Image 1 (cartoon, one colour):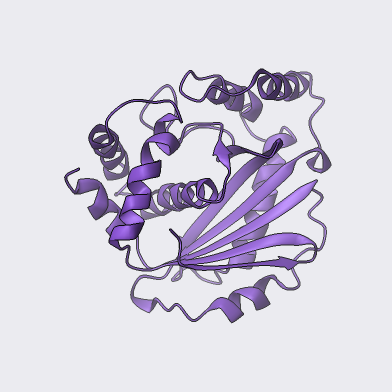
Image 2 (tube, rainbow, N blue to C red):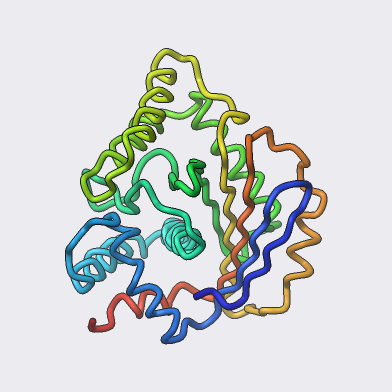
Length: 255
């Protein structure tokens, strides 16, 4: 469903570069097929109509803070991309307890028995000195702070609660692994990056300065990025987006 995608290897890790301009009917069909599972889990049976209403209300509550709105929408698009590339989300996009973003990791995926953590950062092109390089390094620092006990909550406990949800139905072996990380966290025996696979995501919204001809610029930004992030495996995800308004309009369309 993503037409403009470039995948390459840089310094022994995978880089995915995508561009999202005006969303077409084909893209909307992809949203229809994935919206429920991203927001509520693979086994949730609620109608698409009501998921769109709930998600629209969620984003409406963020319009007073453009940074939060961009962050929430960019994270959703990252989930959409990786689901369309064979990753299974073992979490729910919305928090379990309330109509808000989940606490802890931005995402927890499974693909071919490999578990992946997602950390997503975003911003507007008008922000001083913004770049995908800057956002990727920011995501790297953020993820390490979480697993090394330098934040206010245990991200593994929240990951377990999501994976153990009846609409997610994670395998017992995965739940056991997450629980072991959670127990270690509580014992202050924190995980180290070389035990974990990470997806570092960056999104920049371009609005009136949108251009699709920036692949070369993206590659040059990342070509000399840190050769060793310290993780077991690394995927870098960079998304240039024209706007988020098309997505908000889609949520208001009748289903």
